[in-house]
Length: 246
Image (cartoon, rainbow, N blue to C red; front, side):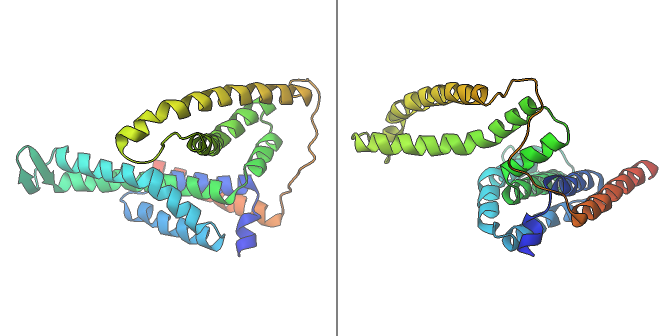
């Protein structure tokens, strides 16, 4: 089962992502949307990416959900009051609106996080190029996907180097604030330098040359990809037609 999930063609997984996003927007209520998260978590666990998926979701999305609940729950206008204190009022309308809003965020973010946990970046970029996207566009997408982990790795390296020079990077908030500039300066300079090196590397590989490019690395669609893509395309069409008819 793990191999089945990880071996799916990237565009096949994209059709699944598109279906979940569209269905979470069109289907009323919040139960279906919230149910997407445990399903995605189960798939991530089967694929051996459960820890990464759960950790990233909690760090990136959970705080946003709590913030929305607090703001909408306290300030959303309504008539059915559950609790009131000073200028703050909690009502059923605010809670229901928070549930509906956050459920869509949970569903969409869960399936997107799962997609990038079970799909290699190079496979995704290759599939986009095979769809006909220009290499300049795919390179921008690849750079955007890789910039966060690269910056994190670079900042950790710089922090270790500054620690070896006696710069305190851990402790109170004031100590961390003082160490911010010694870390930020080398980080910015290193990023600029790496960008220049990347430009030279791309040009040495004839990136801007107007000739047909070839790929050493390749992946292929198999029968299961065509079947799964067809099924989810049909489901998307039916969902859109149903939403307009009803």
